[in-house]
Image 1 (cartoon, rainbow, N blue to C red):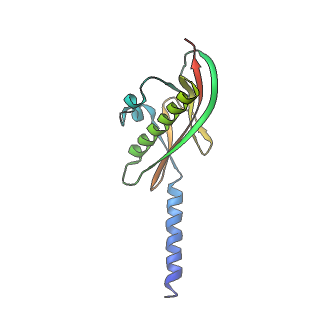
Image 2 (cartoon, helix red, strand yellow):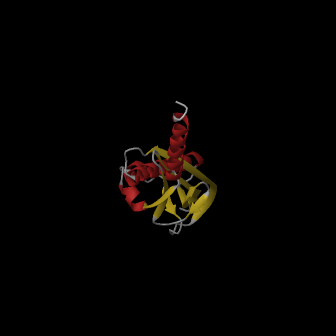
Image 3 (cartoon, one colour):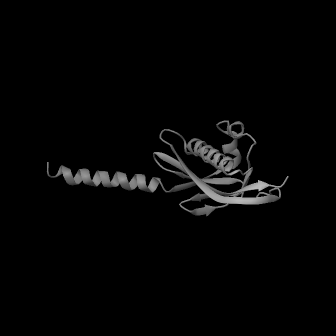
Length: 147
């Protein structure tokens, strides 16, 4: 019995180490693919406009705030792309809700912002993929566009 305890402790430590390293897999996926999945375009509607870093934007009337969101989803039994596209939509819906709450009609300069490390792209977002969870963190400027 005494010999089994160290073996069990080592097995638990190995599993914890493996899942900790898996949580650090930072993947990049196309924004267009995520917007085409999960009925994202229809669910987001057009009440708030979204512009990722590097995309041209209409003239800004006023900047309200800069804010961020971090969303996670259960990734168990899903492909990384499926889980990441789903959680990307969750993050976009949070940006939309925040924009509506503060009276913004657009979110501009959107960047991936996982663990406060920015990844700026007009075509890709970053997703942390682990054995059990997937996460997307976004940051952007909430603005009113000029009419």
